[in-house]
Amino acid sequence: MDGMRTRQEKVDHLLATGIRNRWWCIGPSAMVQDAPVALTRLGEELVAWRDETGKVNCVSDICIHRGASLSRGRVHNGCIECPNHGWRYRGDGTCAEIPAHPDARIPKRVRIDSYPVEERYGWVWVFLGDIPESERPPIPSFPEYDDPDRRAINGTFTWNTNYGRVLENGVDFAHAAFVHPSFGNRDEPAIKSYEVTTGEWHAQARMGMRPPPYKGLWRVKRD
Image (cartoon, rainbow, N blue to C red; front, side):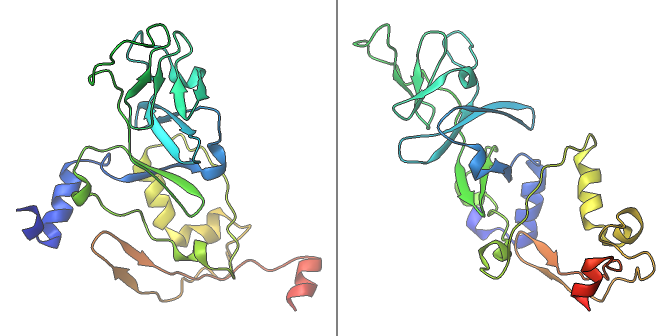
């Protein structure tokens, strides 16, 4: 039974199902408003929008009728409307209305793929995998985002490289002093001692390094 799996068995199972079975941050919450937003994640063409309650929805960017791109349509009464014939889909992927045949019974099979969505830390997270909800790893924990004494600074970077290299760069703290002189100190590159803590689905550490010498007015303020 799944509930009897050991921690290692859970990890092995998750790795076996591939990187798709993770919560993926598709962008900042402010990115998704009332108009459809086209996205490509893990090779999937998606469309996201907010319904009348403010909830973010995410479905495949294709109308099952004639294959039109739903992101070129509009949001109507909380549904995403196809730009070709006005077919309207709910956030769960089911077809709510076919305007040309308003009285026709819509078969249950008339639906598109939809994906679970959560908003957290000011970002939109989508689960693109296919494993049961009980087996999904949680959204990563970033308690700093909820700390009133901290201010989050966000930016967008496009890296034309393999995701493995991006991950490697992120955990390689020691390169900052030599590659990023704006916040690393080449003259004091030593990384302070740190401890790695682990949980069922994560590992984390808090690292510290010396910043570069301040210049101009910043130096006066620091002193």
